[in-house]
Image 1 (cartoon, helix red, strand yellow):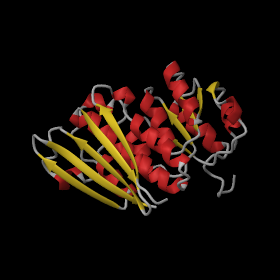
Image 2 (image 1 turned 30 degrees about the horizontal axis):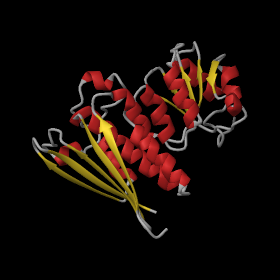
Image 3 (image 1 turned 60 degrees about the vertical axis):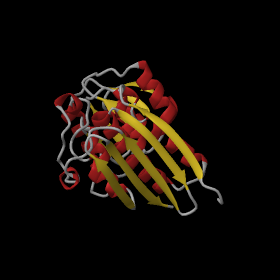
Image 4 (image 1 turned 90 degrees about the vertical axis):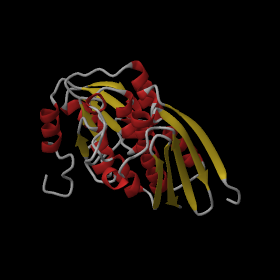
Length: 117
Length: 140
Protein backbone atom coordinates (compact mmCIF):
# COMPACT_ATOMS: atom_id res chain seq x y z
CA UNK A 1 0.00 0.00 0.00
CA UNK A 2 1.20 3.52 -0.71
CA UNK A 3 1.01 6.50 1.64
CA UNK A 4 -1.26 8.13 -0.95
CA UNK A 5 -3.67 5.18 -0.60
CA UNK A 6 -3.84 5.77 3.16
CA UNK A 7 -4.79 9.38 2.57
CA UNK A 8 -7.59 8.33 0.23
CA UNK A 9 -8.88 5.46 2.36
CA UNK A 10 -9.07 7.62 5.48
CA UNK A 11 -10.19 10.74 3.60
CA UNK A 12 -7.31 12.42 5.41
CA UNK A 13 -5.82 15.87 5.09
CA UNK A 14 -2.11 15.73 4.23
CA UNK A 15 -0.14 18.15 6.41
CA UNK A 16 3.33 17.39 5.06
CA UNK A 17 5.09 14.83 2.91
CA UNK A 18 3.55 15.51 -0.51
CA UNK A 19 6.66 13.96 -2.07
CA UNK A 20 6.14 10.73 -0.12
CA UNK A 21 2.72 9.73 -1.42
CA UNK A 22 4.23 7.06 -3.69
CA UNK A 23 6.23 5.55 -0.83
CA UNK A 24 5.31 1.91 -0.09
CA UNK A 25 4.34 0.88 3.45
CA UNK A 26 3.68 -2.67 4.61
CA UNK A 27 2.44 -2.45 8.19
CA UNK A 28 1.06 -0.07 10.79
CA UNK A 29 0.77 0.38 14.51
CA UNK A 30 -2.01 2.16 16.44
CA UNK A 31 -1.20 3.48 19.90
CA UNK A 32 -1.31 6.54 22.14
CA UNK A 33 1.46 5.08 24.27
CA UNK A 34 4.82 5.99 22.75
CA UNK A 35 6.57 3.73 25.28
CA UNK A 36 4.79 0.77 23.71
CA UNK A 37 5.59 1.91 20.19
CA UNK A 38 9.27 2.01 21.13
CA UNK A 39 9.08 -1.38 22.83
CA UNK A 40 6.94 -3.47 20.53
CA UNK A 41 6.97 -2.02 17.04
CA UNK A 42 9.24 -3.56 14.42
CA UNK A 43 9.42 -2.49 10.82
CA UNK A 44 6.03 -0.85 10.84
CA UNK A 45 6.00 2.16 8.61
CA UNK A 46 2.80 3.86 9.76
CA UNK A 47 1.75 5.16 13.17
CA UNK A 48 -1.89 5.95 13.92
CA UNK A 49 -2.41 7.93 17.10
CA UNK A 50 -4.65 10.35 18.93
CA UNK A 51 -1.77 11.68 21.01
CA UNK A 52 -0.52 15.12 20.01
CA UNK A 53 2.90 16.23 21.21
CA UNK A 54 6.36 16.47 19.60
CA UNK A 55 7.40 13.13 21.09
CA UNK A 56 5.02 11.40 18.67
CA UNK A 57 7.16 12.68 15.78
CA UNK A 58 10.41 11.85 17.57
CA UNK A 59 9.22 8.34 18.45
CA UNK A 60 8.19 7.68 14.86
CA UNK A 61 11.53 9.01 13.66
CA UNK A 62 13.53 6.80 16.05
CA UNK A 63 11.55 3.80 14.77
CA UNK A 64 12.21 4.77 11.13
CA UNK A 65 8.49 5.19 10.51
CA UNK A 66 7.53 7.15 7.41
CA UNK A 67 3.91 8.17 8.01
CA UNK A 68 1.87 9.40 10.97
CA UNK A 69 -1.94 9.59 10.92
CA UNK A 70 -3.54 11.72 13.62
CA UNK A 71 -7.02 10.33 14.20
CA UNK A 72 -10.15 12.08 15.49
CA UNK A 73 -9.02 15.18 13.55
CA UNK A 74 -6.34 15.95 16.09
CA UNK A 75 -4.22 18.84 14.86
CA UNK A 76 -0.44 18.82 15.33
CA UNK A 77 1.30 22.16 15.84
CA UNK A 78 3.35 23.89 13.14
CA UNK A 79 6.49 22.98 15.10
CA UNK A 80 5.51 19.31 15.01
CA UNK A 81 4.88 19.44 11.28
CA UNK A 82 8.23 21.16 10.73
CA UNK A 83 9.96 18.46 12.82
CA UNK A 84 8.22 15.74 10.78
CA UNK A 85 9.34 17.41 7.57
CA UNK A 86 12.90 17.46 8.89
CA UNK A 87 12.62 13.75 9.76
CA UNK A 88 11.18 12.81 6.38
CA UNK A 89 7.83 11.72 7.75
CA UNK A 90 4.50 12.27 6.01
CA UNK A 91 1.81 13.57 8.39
CA UNK A 92 -1.92 13.53 7.86
CA UNK A 93 -5.06 13.84 9.94
CA UNK A 94 -8.36 12.08 9.59
CA UNK A 95 -11.77 12.46 11.20
CA UNK A 96 -11.87 8.66 11.69
CA UNK A 97 -11.51 7.23 15.15
CA UNK A 98 -8.48 5.06 15.87
CA UNK A 99 -10.38 1.74 15.78
CA UNK A 100 -12.19 2.67 12.60
CA UNK A 101 -9.05 3.94 10.84
CA UNK A 102 -7.11 0.81 11.81
CA UNK A 103 -9.94 -1.39 10.55
CA UNK A 104 -10.17 0.41 7.22
CA UNK A 105 -6.44 0.08 6.59
CA UNK A 106 -6.30 -3.53 7.74
CA UNK A 107 -9.28 -4.49 5.58
CA UNK A 108 -7.60 -2.79 2.62
CA UNK A 109 -4.57 -5.03 3.13
CA UNK A 110 -2.11 -3.04 5.22
CA UNK A 111 -0.20 -5.43 7.47
CA UNK A 112 -1.67 -8.45 5.70
CA UNK A 113 0.63 -8.68 2.71
CA UNK A 114 1.62 -12.21 3.56
CA UNK A 115 -1.97 -13.34 4.05
CA UNK A 116 -4.65 -13.74 1.43
CA UNK A 117 -5.84 -10.22 0.80
CA UNK B 1 37.87 4.95 11.10
CA UNK B 2 40.94 5.36 13.29
CA UNK B 3 40.04 8.00 15.84
CA UNK B 4 37.11 8.07 18.23
CA UNK B 5 34.40 10.62 17.46
CA UNK B 6 32.93 12.23 20.56
CA UNK B 7 29.57 13.98 20.81
CA UNK B 8 28.30 15.85 23.88
CA UNK B 9 24.81 17.13 24.70
CA UNK B 10 23.07 18.84 27.59
CA UNK B 11 19.63 17.36 28.20
CA UNK B 12 17.18 20.03 29.36
CA UNK B 13 15.11 18.67 32.21
CA UNK B 14 12.66 21.54 32.21
CA UNK B 15 11.20 20.95 28.79
CA UNK B 16 9.50 17.67 27.94
CA UNK B 17 8.70 18.89 24.44
CA UNK B 18 12.37 19.23 23.52
CA UNK B 19 13.33 15.81 24.94
CA UNK B 20 14.87 13.67 22.24
CA UNK B 21 16.84 16.44 20.54
CA UNK B 22 20.17 14.83 21.46
CA UNK B 23 19.08 11.42 20.14
CA UNK B 24 17.77 13.05 16.99
CA UNK B 25 21.13 14.77 16.47
CA UNK B 26 23.08 11.55 17.13
CA UNK B 27 20.93 9.70 14.63
CA UNK B 28 21.75 12.29 11.98
CA UNK B 29 25.47 12.20 12.79
CA UNK B 30 25.61 8.39 12.60
CA UNK B 31 23.84 8.51 9.27
CA UNK B 32 26.41 11.00 7.99
CA UNK B 33 29.16 8.65 9.18
CA UNK B 34 27.64 5.92 7.03
CA UNK B 35 26.68 3.57 9.90
CA UNK B 36 24.30 0.72 9.07
CA UNK B 37 20.57 1.46 9.56
CA UNK B 38 20.35 -1.33 12.14
CA UNK B 39 23.10 0.16 14.32
CA UNK B 40 21.67 3.67 13.96
CA UNK B 41 18.24 2.46 15.01
CA UNK B 42 19.54 0.63 18.09
CA UNK B 43 21.56 3.64 19.25
CA UNK B 44 18.74 6.10 18.53
CA UNK B 45 16.06 4.12 20.38
CA UNK B 46 18.23 3.29 23.41
CA UNK B 47 19.45 6.87 23.75
CA UNK B 48 15.98 8.33 23.22
CA UNK B 49 14.52 6.14 25.96
CA UNK B 50 17.34 7.23 28.25
CA UNK B 51 16.86 10.87 27.38
CA UNK B 52 13.14 10.68 28.11
CA UNK B 53 13.93 9.01 31.45
CA UNK B 54 16.37 11.78 32.34
CA UNK B 55 13.71 14.41 31.67
CA UNK B 56 10.90 12.53 33.44
CA UNK B 57 12.79 11.39 36.52
CA UNK B 58 16.00 13.37 36.95
CA UNK B 59 15.51 16.94 35.75
CA UNK B 60 17.84 16.41 32.80
CA UNK B 61 21.57 15.77 32.68
CA UNK B 62 24.31 15.24 30.11
CA UNK B 63 24.71 12.74 27.29
CA UNK B 64 28.01 11.67 25.73
CA UNK B 65 28.38 9.47 22.70
CA UNK B 66 31.66 7.96 21.53
CA UNK B 67 31.90 6.34 18.13
CA UNK B 68 34.81 3.92 18.01
CA UNK B 69 36.00 1.38 15.48
CA UNK B 70 34.12 -1.53 16.98
CA UNK B 71 31.30 -0.02 19.00
CA UNK B 72 29.33 3.07 19.95
CA UNK B 73 29.23 4.03 23.63
CA UNK B 74 26.39 6.13 25.05
CA UNK B 75 26.86 7.61 28.53
CA UNK B 76 23.85 9.28 30.17
CA UNK B 77 24.56 11.05 33.43
CA UNK B 78 22.09 12.78 35.70
CA UNK B 79 21.97 14.22 39.19
CA UNK B 80 18.48 12.93 39.90
CA UNK B 81 17.15 10.97 42.87
CA UNK B 82 18.81 7.67 41.88
CA UNK B 83 17.14 4.28 41.35
CA UNK B 84 16.30 2.58 44.67
CA UNK B 85 15.78 -0.91 43.22
CA UNK B 86 17.45 -1.60 39.86
CA UNK B 87 16.06 -5.13 39.61
CA UNK B 88 12.53 -3.79 39.97
CA UNK B 89 13.18 -0.91 37.58
CA UNK B 90 14.37 -3.39 34.93
CA UNK B 91 11.08 -5.28 35.03
CA UNK B 92 8.83 -4.61 32.05
CA UNK B 93 5.79 -2.63 33.12
CA UNK B 94 7.23 -1.27 36.35
CA UNK B 95 7.21 2.52 36.44
CA UNK B 96 7.21 5.32 38.98
CA UNK B 97 6.09 7.87 36.40
CA UNK B 98 3.10 9.97 37.37
CA UNK B 99 -0.18 10.21 35.48
CA UNK B 100 0.79 13.49 33.80
CA UNK B 101 3.72 11.68 32.15
CA UNK B 102 1.52 8.77 31.08
CA UNK B 103 -0.85 11.28 29.49
CA UNK B 104 2.09 12.35 27.32
CA UNK B 105 2.55 8.77 26.07
CA UNK B 106 5.38 7.64 28.33
CA UNK B 107 5.85 5.94 31.68
CA UNK B 108 4.73 2.45 30.68
CA UNK B 109 7.69 0.88 32.44
CA UNK B 110 9.40 -0.12 29.21
CA UNK B 111 12.26 2.39 29.13
CA UNK B 112 15.09 0.58 30.92
CA UNK B 113 14.15 -2.91 29.58
CA UNK B 114 14.03 -1.42 26.10
CA UNK B 115 17.43 0.21 26.51
CA UNK B 116 18.86 -3.16 27.49
CA UNK B 117 17.09 -4.87 24.60
CA UNK B 118 18.51 -2.53 21.97
CA UNK B 119 22.11 -2.48 23.24
CA UNK B 120 24.83 -5.10 23.48
CA UNK B 121 25.91 -4.03 26.94
CA UNK B 122 24.34 -1.81 29.60
CA UNK B 123 25.61 -0.78 33.01
CA UNK B 124 23.74 1.24 35.62
CA UNK B 125 25.60 3.11 38.36
CA UNK B 126 23.22 4.79 40.74
CA UNK B 127 23.52 6.44 44.15
CA UNK B 128 20.41 7.54 46.00
CA UNK B 129 20.25 11.31 46.26
CA UNK B 130 23.33 11.75 44.07
CA UNK B 131 22.39 10.57 40.59
CA UNK B 132 22.55 7.85 37.96
CA UNK B 133 24.98 7.09 35.15
CA UNK B 134 23.95 4.64 32.47
CA UNK B 135 26.59 3.35 30.07
CA UNK B 136 25.42 1.49 26.97
CA UNK B 137 27.36 -0.06 24.11
CA UNK B 138 26.17 -1.01 20.66
CA UNK B 139 28.51 -3.14 18.56
CA UNK B 140 29.15 -1.92 15.04
